Image (tube, rainbow, N blue to C red; front, top):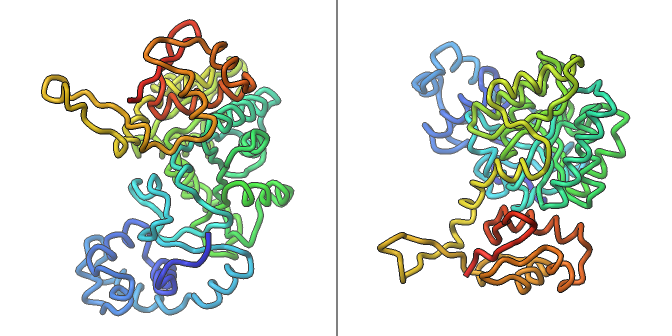
Length: 382
C-alpha cells in the first residue's frame, strides 16, 4: 500500500484525543461530516453529539492537539507503514461493517480485494502438538483454496496458522496488539517479515505502543472483523480466542471450533463453543458448507435469465464477467451440464491432483461449480 489517507493528520489528532473511542468517533464524523470539522468544533458543538456531553467535550478540546501527528507519520514512513482511515477505499470492507471499526488502521504490507475471502484461526498460546498441527493444517488447506488466513501472530496456535498459510504460498494477515514499530512476540521477527511480504500486519494502535495486556481484547475484534468466519483451535474457558469468537458472533460472523481430547483443559473452550452452537469442524469441507452463502458476494456478476425471470427469477453467472484464473479457465473447459468426475478433470488438465482439489474448492465458493456425491462436479455458470 502506497501513501497515507488524505488528511490523516486530523484523523490521528481526533482518534488520540481523550474520551474518543471508535463508536464516539463514528458519531462525531457523522455529525460534523469531516475530520477537519471535528477539529474545528467548539466544546458546545461537540457536547451536542449523542454520547459525548459537556465533560467529554471539554476533554476532547483540551487534548486534541496533544498528539504529535507529524512525528507519527514520519515514524510510519520510516517503518514502511501506511496509515489509512475508514473512508479510504483501501480500508477492508468486512472490517468496516462491525459495530466499532477502528477509525484508522496502520498497515505494513498490502491488503488486497481477495482478502475479503478471509478466515480467522485463533487459539491457545501454550497449545499442544495436536493443536499446532491442526491450526497449520487448516490454514494450509484454506490458503490453498484461496482464503486469506487472519490471526494475531501470538505464540502457539496463531503462529502455526500464519505459518501454515505461508507454507501453501497463500496470503495471511496478522493483527498486532501493539504499534507496528514493535514486534510481539519478539521471536516472531522473521514471521512478521514473511507476513508483510505475503499479506499484511495491521494495528489500530500508534506506532510505538507497547504490547500491554489491555490492548489485546480490542485487537481481537479486528481479527474477527476482518474475517467471514473464526475457527477456534484449543482455548481455555477464559481466553483471547473466545473473546475473538464472541466478537465474531456479535457481528453476525460464523464461528467454528476444532474438537479436542475430552480430558484436556485446552478443549474446554472449543467444546463450550460447540455446545453453544458453533460449527464442529473436522475438515475443510465443513468450512465450505458453512460458508455456502458466499455466493451472494458475487451478485454483481449475476444477470437474470430472461427466459424464466418472471416464473422463477432464476439467476445465471456470466462467465465473461468473472475474473477467472488460468487454472480455473482450464477446469471450466472440462466441465459441462453433465457431471464430470474429478479424475477426468485431473487427466484433461494435466494438473496435479492437489492443485485441482484446491481450485475446485475456491470455484465452489464462488458459485462457479457444484460438488456432487462421489467426486463429481457440475458447471453452474452460463
